[in-house]
Image 1: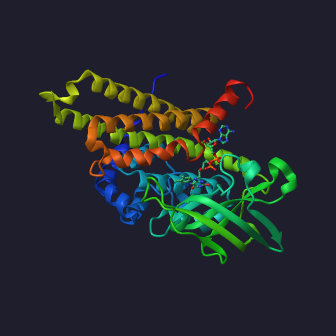
Image 2 (image 1 turned 60 degrees about the horizontal axis):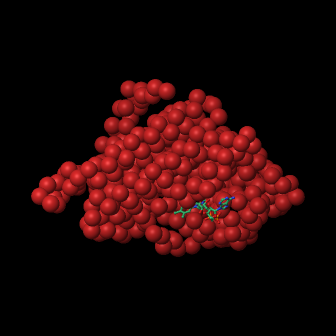
Image 3 (image 1 turned 45 degrees about the vertical axis):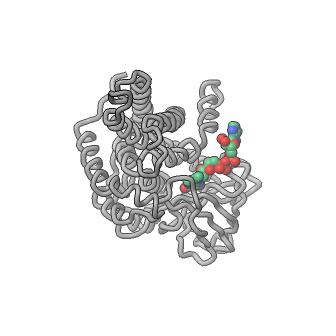
Length: 383
Ligand SMILES: Cc1cc2nc3c(=O)[nH]c(=O)nc-3n(C[C@H](O)[C@H](O)[C@H](O)COP(=O)(O)OP(=O)(O)OC[C@H]3O[C@@H](n4cnc5c(N)ncnc54)[C@H](O)[C@@H]3O)c2cc1C
């Protein structure tokens, strides 16, 4: 397989990279320490097209190709895990389901305000206190139709962007008797009475990405806020997560690239036994492995993005890309800390933050175990 980016995609990478290098990366430590979302940078992302990567131009988006979308998320991850995750979730989880399954009225109402950078962002609430990997069996948040409204009761957990969103697409059980067709997606504006957004979760990393639990207490939304078809919530979710996995793969690569660059620089500067530690073969092997694995992860992620762009089946490749890139990123960040020695364990050095941020990548949008399950189904012909 021969692969290269088009001239347009290379230009796009340069533009996003320069933006991230000036507006995002210099703030990454501050964002981590304060837990404040980097709104000043995100406000500027609207005009660059970073908030509407998958949204058609008629609704204000930039509608870039799937490879360019992955490039943007990779570059954001290189700059700051928190900001990168928020923008990845906004595009891939909050906007994509409306782009793919929404009516033109829903697109105009909900997408336009969140892609400009003047308003807030978008979120998707699948996970619950008792259900993450097993959404089909575990989701208990219920929606009952009453006249021209849905009444929703339940709770969600770990929802990225919930407290900084305009709306939260919510996976609900609409008809428990319909088995695989018992779940649906409903768009819930955040100001809906009865929706409670709890304080930010105290997390290991990604401190500048807002993550909240939610309670839905008899909330009412119009029936035309149903997204896609009633009973198709599970397949709509799986389709959304396929795209999201390319995004988390790209984010993992960006984070790992940043750790790798720090390790290369540090290894040339730091001296031990009278010479730079980069002269030690043991460290050269770590760097060589990291460079090789980064390259391999890029091929997987951009292959999955290319398949998506071509309109071909990409579920297996997205699962492989997410699995490999996220586990690769952990190894690369781990060794970047090792190369930094004691300084790698210090909050004064970026690799410490990057390592904590990366830890989520093998968990969110389907754990590594779930990716292996998906891949194994293809291998065994049970997909
Ligand atoms: C920072 C953060 C942000 C998040 N953002 C969002 C968001 O925006 N929206 C959202 O809906 N969710 C979000 N999540 C939730 C995330 O997607 C889930 O945590 C994840 O899918 C795993 O679900 P769980 O936590 O319920 O773990 P469980 O499903 O309880 O899994 C626990 C363990 O069991 C393993 N396991 C489960 N089933 C199997 C199986 N069949 N075979 C093998 N192993 C299995 C898992 O791999 C895992 O190791 C976020 C989570 C975090 C931490």
